[in-house]
Length: 284
Image (cartoon, rainbow, N blue to C red; front, side, top):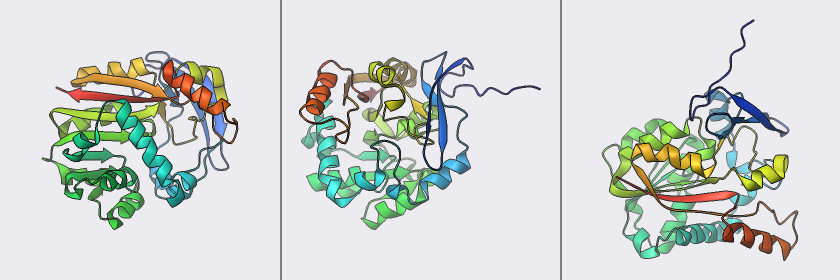
């Protein structure tokens, strides 16, 4: 009997090494490390219909594994924490509030419009902001707040529009074809425009933590990138990395008491070994 081996959607290689198996009440996923590019990916890949059903079924209320809870992250009381995270990441890559306020910005993977909410709280002109998301349910929530948002299937509505900045906040890891998505996003960038993306980073911490690494989320985190691979994917598309950094020791407060959590997080950022990476790239 012939056994079909799915090639990596980042580099096309079929060689792979098993890394981790994680389960929730509903889903079980295996991650393998690609022998060609070192990206860790869910194997076998989730099918598109399964993903669409997952993200359109009360996604904001889901409790994942470990300390990851969308119900908490998207709750009103947690908004100040998320807004502070945006402010910190934006500052870390050298973007100023003044620069953001004069930019046309497209948030790809906008969810319920939370990043657009933050921009609006700074005084951004809502007419300068756009959002795209895989979930019709999320898009509707963003629209209810007054944001101009569309589904991935309807993104042609923004064709011809050019933006100074395209953002992907914890989105790349959710995509079935992340390289294709990054290439397609160039159509929305002005020459000299920037893309800002935040995504988990495979490396020292993931190797040390193994299955305890919080970014192994069944069905959701399909591709987890080492920084070098991510950069090597983007350069041929015309992107130039202007800033790359990482933060977070993957030490959730529910498990690691202070002051140890703060110390671990500080060390992860200072040594650039964080579990989450942020890249600012210019295009052409």
